[in-house]
Amino acid sequence: MKTLTVLGSTGSIGTNTLDVVRHSRHLYQVYALVAGHNVEVLAAQIVEFRPKIAAVATSEGLARLSNRLVEAGLPRAEWPELLCGSAARVQAATASEVDTVISAIVGVAGLEATYEAVCLGKRVGLANKEVLVSGGKLVMDAVREHQAELLPVDSEHNGAHQCLRAGNRQQVSKLILTASGGPFRNTPKEQLALVTPRQALKHPTWRMGNRITIDCATLMNKGFEVIEACWLFGFAPSEVDVVIHPQSTVHAMIEYSDGSVLAQVSATDMRMPIQYALTYPDRQPAPVPKINWAEARQWEFLPPDFEKFPLLKLAYQCQEAGGSAACTLNAADEIAVEAFLEGRIGFLSIYEIVSETLTRMPVRTPRTIEDILEIDRESRTLARDSLRLYAAV
Ligand SMILES: NC(=O)c1ccc[n+]([C@@H]2O[C@H](COP(=O)([O-])OP(=O)(O)OC[C@H]3O[C@@H](n4cnc5c(N)ncnc54)[C@H](OP(=O)(O)O)[C@@H]3O)[C@@H](O)[C@H]2O)c1
Image 1 (cartoon, protein in one colour):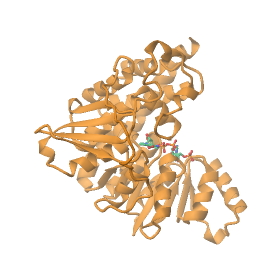
Image 2 (image 1 turned 90 degrees about the horizontal axis):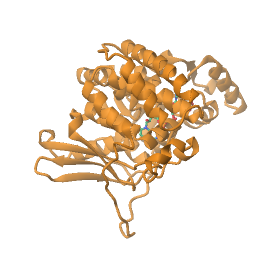
Image 3 (image 1 turned 180 degrees about the vertical axis):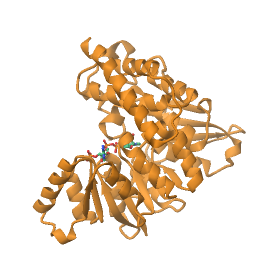
């Protein structure tokens, strides 16, 4: 039986993780649930999964969570230990009872707890791509030093992980990551200036949190995935290709040196990679529909348009540059996406703000998690500064 901490339990990945648990209760027990502000969902999860620890982002959230548990009628003797803040996230991820951590907080708020779990050699199912985008070198050094198991939950990397098991890593020539192309795949470039947050939040194939959905619309998300793949599997950026595959059924492909290509194919459902990360190297029946091969289907594969989606190219350049460039890329993008969602800037200004922040922020070599968090803070300040210019336009 695996004992789990779910970081980001109230989000899209978190709730899918708990659904996997719900379908195989004999395989898992939930030790800790960690959320941000959504105490309604967290309280319901506490009642259902009975964790020993539950944590939220702030003390104000903690008070609201207590009220919710009272309203839910859960006797106080059955409440978990209630905690808040970044120390609570670390405590939940590093508890000795826990063997597996699902890292599914959005943004750098999940970095420290994920890193500390890695440093204790735990299995980490990694959905939070910002962990490797911001702190790739530090985290991967810790994975090697502490022999942690870092299993990708991002569907593309999970697909690559599966394809890599079929052959010798030394004989791999390329990783091909698929991308749905997002809601604006067929929108002419000239019209992108006018697209609204509502249109951008309509992802054609996946239902996810707001930030990643906007990142899919700009292809920034695919850029982050290129960076994540480089760290996870030891690829150079030039060895990672992106191909647009609107059906999102082939998740990744690995090309071996003889030109043979292996693809991982499964339903468009995150419970598949989540369960893989939990049960690896075993496989279990998953609560996911299987592909019906009797149904006629067509798959398309198209090259990405780097001109129309320049953030993808920027991600390659940041990974080539090394140091803190990708950390700044992520921080600036988060600020710009937030501003776009609030209607303060247009869609195309996301790129402008990110690229201007990268130009203004010197590349440094972070040596600790605190260095990364400091670079993240400074990058955000610069991005907010640039935002003022574009928000005024
Ligand atoms: N969704 C997908 O299919 C998918 C696929 C691949 C990778 N990912 C990656 O997985 C991560 C999560 O994505 P998502 O789609 O699940 O996002 P989401 O639905 O927005 O959920 C984010 C989670 O993070 C929590 N959170 C935010 N700030 C926090 C803080 N300061 N302290 C503690 N918890 C905090 C949220 O809590 P509250 O809601 O309670 O505030 C929520 O539980 C992202 O890095 C994303 O890129 C997602």
